[in-house]
Image (cartoon, rainbow, N blue to C red; front, side, top):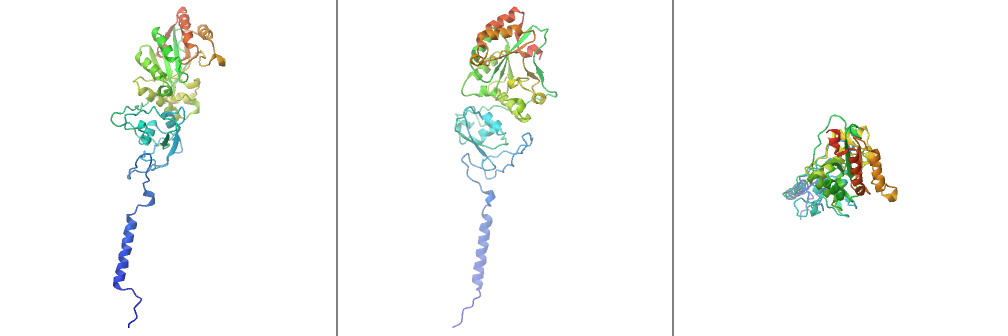
Length: 371
């Protein structure tokens, strides 16, 4: 009986070669680990999506990474909505836009989907967990029927904004100005008193008070300004009322545009070219940034009523507000009040009477300085 040879037969060799070829083909067909698409709870990812580059470390970089359709395509962070948050405020803190947050989270929250009947980007709820890609901006293309806030591009001014504390002292005009960004009562009552007495005024509003879902006062005041354009004018008081000296030029632009977008969602009014700095603080860099964003006048004041402070905290009484204005007002004065001021509503009739007695006439800032 012959002893079997240990050498493989031609048939066995052929089978081994075939198996090796099949294994190699399967390995070529499998995706590499770096190309794996991981399902996302925030929406489906497109296999053809291109990962974005990490955002630049410089907050003032003009290079914007391309947008991503999926939170898994590049580093995302989760943010839990806190009391008092708005989409704009969250976006500003993460160097993106509120529209981008809408885009990334519309599948998780129908209220952020422009195609959904419940769409309302001004309404977010405490506890929502939002996916955010810091430093990335997604071009906003709303679906049918959406009413997005348009982006208002600034018209740069070659020179810095001019700080204005008063107009000509030979004028018989006095500018009554009212800020609105904190306390909201009795804002509407003050506006109605001005309307009833045909008193012109300049109103400086924050975007946050217009967008607020806790009160309608900001939107109601904006509507009254819109409906009485021959009487009132609108100025920009920032979005979140931050000290502009502490912000980068990019953050300043975000604050200004945020207020503009809050207005543009509801009216074709423009706050340009008037800006009032929160806390009245500014420096040469802030003035340059104002000019770059289309604001030719940074409006201050020469009489501060201090009406924002309650009497319980050492603030003025009604009589003290009246006396301060009456005793210090001159032609060309700019007087600072607040639509949410304590005792302001009660003081205004006597103030208007005192101006008339001295031959002075209320005016808007633009009329006072001849814009």
